[in-house]
Length: 116
Length: 111
Image (cartoon, each protein chain N blue to C red):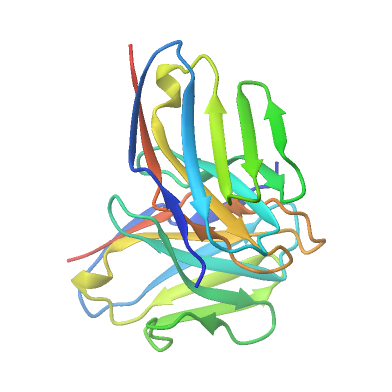
């Protein structure tokens, strides 16, 4: 199946710094990618929909100035957690579907962010 | 809004069949999915079913869909210890719409 690569797998940063997470579709093009957040032992919460060449669409309650999303090409979307705080510590996962409309939705490996 | 519900835990003996159930509320769901998540890892797509299908089988996995009752199930035959994980049910309208997930069912396989 198609591969979505997410980097880094884990990161530890100090409070107040920014962290960038990359999500790449390796063998297909994705007009749209999705960013999710997962709290321990909980489900995936959709944060935003990342659209290639345009602004991301954020879910209610997600701060767009804190979670900056850029989707500069059909194979790369980035999520930057700005001025990170301990409460931003979480597991972040991206997802992408082939722009040809195939139903399969593929997920990256996830990024474990710990803010100290 | 859309809602997907799953039971949180299931424990089975190795070699038995596991059945994980899911209900959803969105009658316009187009595709329904089952994903597997192992500790600290991302989500692995196991299988999906189109909403106009009743059943889909793929090796040890059987998906049953009752669209009238908005009920989806995943049966794992001959469950192995390596099947221990969290299983998520999800639905979408298709196209470029995001998936809506249930809370996940933690499957424990006892040797």
